[in-house]
Image (cartoon, rainbow, N blue to C red):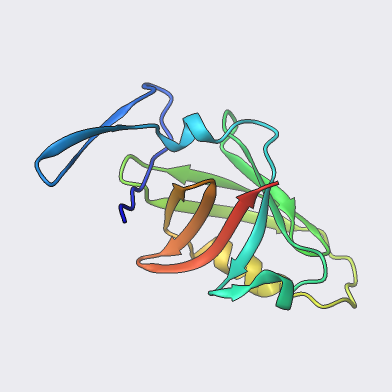
Length: 142
């Protein structure tokens, strides 16, 4: 099984990756993520998100403004992001609404994981936020 990490880049549609003495062409993340796409949380810290949330959190990217936003299970959130050529991710300045939520949800864990993620990968229409080698959040396209 091959795992590729991708990076956002506006300068190119293809990136060359050397692996086992061969060169493969892969699409960068920004070619796979488009405006108005909604990613729905599937796993948080390896656990099925349906066991943790009544309403599954969502994530959308504004590639031009370098912003993320969505629903964190009850409240809305938004923040800034940076992603470098080595797939290092930095989500910052996350703000949320503060509605009372009496349903089953781990909003604070979700927002904490957004803040702690430092790598990103996309594979088979699955977007994964990682902290080093540990998967924190796993999303699928809605």
